[in-house]
Image (cartoon, rainbow, N blue to C red; front, top):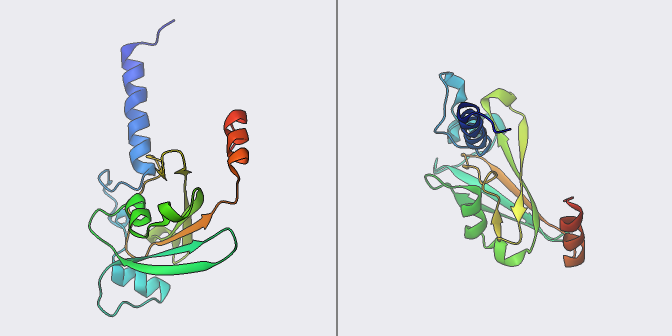
Length: 162
């Protein structure tokens, strides 16, 4: 039995709207004044961080499979996404697979840091399209190199588990 064209069109629109909202896209704002991302001064006030030049920035922290850590602060370019940050820090060349979290302070979190998990696809060497979120001033991108072997990855693909 085929679904009616109206039902399938509604399902597609719903799926696209959900994907846009989950990606961090800011084009689908609703009328709430607090729905906007915090600017650099608001983030600094909440987190206690200070940026003397008042330029919006993000922090990218990496940890390899042996525990060695490194952090770098990047200027936040207009429209910068998570994939852009990975390319700029050259982490896609260093790590084959990785676990990624973007830690963000939002107006709704009352000063608490909220982790946003992002899936990385090592076969495509990029963040999944639904997880390539727009970055906001003060975001902290935390990248941990996965210690899975190619055999582990093949078995997880075969079993359907990640």
